[in-house]
Amino acid sequence: MDGFFRLGMVNQHKDLLKPGDQCIGGGYYHFDYTSNRIVPDRASYDFGNPKWHLLEVLKVPSVYRGLRLVYKYDDNFHDDFNVNEELKIEYYD
Image 1: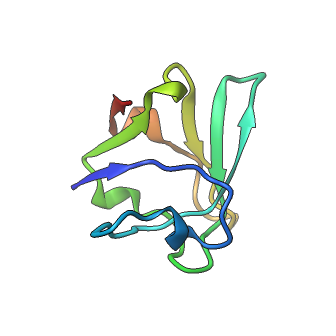
Image 2: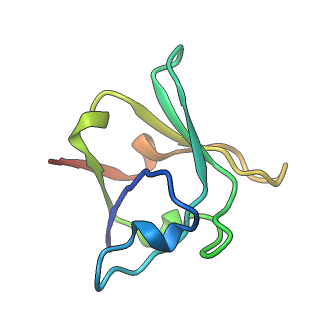
Image 3: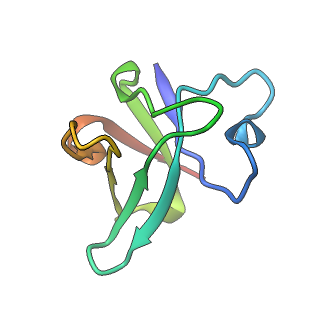
């Protein structure tokens, strides 16, 4: 399954979906400019944690090219998930 990575200022993650889309999780994010990373974390209220294991390719907007994605679980159980190392990343405009 291919997935599109979308960021936005919305009330609920469903507001980022386009017609026909299915969401496999979400959360919040911040930019770590010192480490050149986007750090998504926590869980979406409406879709839960991202289900990275369902993806083979993550499609990321090209404006984020060069930034690493590292997901931080908020459960003190899982290690950080380095998206760039675990998934194939494709950039789109």
